[in-house]
Amino acid sequence: MIDDDDRLLGGARQFDSRALAAIHDRYYPDLYRYLLYRTNDEHTAEDLASEVFMRLLDNLHAGKTPAVLRAWLFGVAGNLVADHYRRLSRRPQVALSDEIPASTGDVESETGKRLAASAVRDALHHLTDEQQQVLALRFGDGRTIDDTATLMRKSVTAVKQLQFRAVAALRRHLEEVL
Image (cartoon, rainbow, N blue to C red):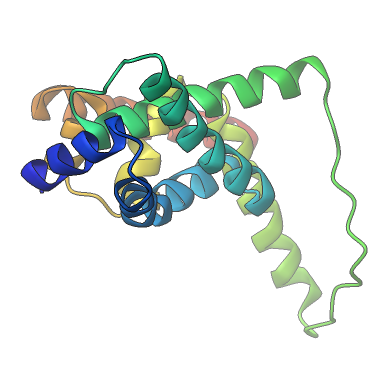
């Protein structure tokens, strides 16, 4: 896959539309899933995934080529998520829904699930960016420790420690709330 990425990057440096399309087709689904897990918003995930590829094009135009394409793309995605939340914290927004939820009959159970999910989302925002990223890659995207280490440019041991600390911090935040 690395050889194939090198070939695609060579074509992308020449602005070959087939190479650029192949990069997009190969990495967009994984980036979108990762960003969806981190933002919990489909439109934001789509926008940020598109921005990742725009940044790739900007770098290529500037004559800068990523050394490891996959790691570079996910690194940019992680930075964009951090920027997104920084912007939101400056201007908090509340999403309104036009939909009327269907009654499932078990309002108490549904309310409990929604409150628990909301508590987990809120607790995730108390974690560091790296902790959020490791949880998103490991549990949201189902990646292995080795793959997560490669994407985060860390050792396997560092990822294990980061994951352990992230889960412990998440547990502490949830125990305070629940």
